[in-house]
Image (cartoon, rainbow, N blue to C red; front, side, top):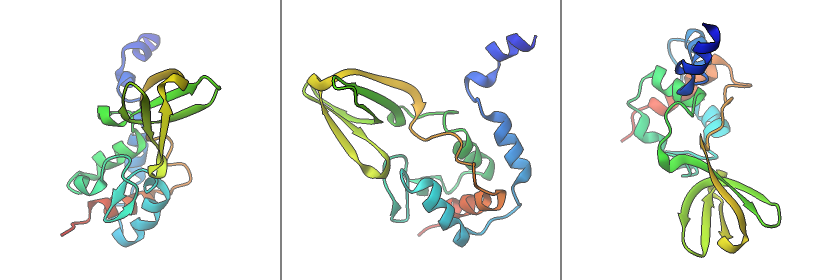
Length: 165
């Protein structure tokens, strides 16, 4: 039964569900949005923008201010739970053996442009690409909770949730 559960369970959709559940029990009931800026800059700003901070690689997090603590925590800890097609990671291998990964920003008959952390854009000539494939996963890495306390995570969530004018 355990083997079949591994094969057909909800792990197909969320391989980090247990981690999210554990973290939900650890989070303080409230967070401090001012203190949440530091974990945002550390964990999120390389690929997300919010109030002029960060880089617009992934979604602008201001649009998520209305989301619940549980929903935001799930998205941080389990980025592959639900992936918008615009944010799927691609890997390109060049004929010279170099590997580049990022979001497929644009492509033409001549070039492919990958958008990477900190807003870097890498343009590759199609004739130099040996292989280009989707990972089927989010560019956002798993494991962002490593080195982060529950209080810092709750402050980060408060920072994202704060109302903006």
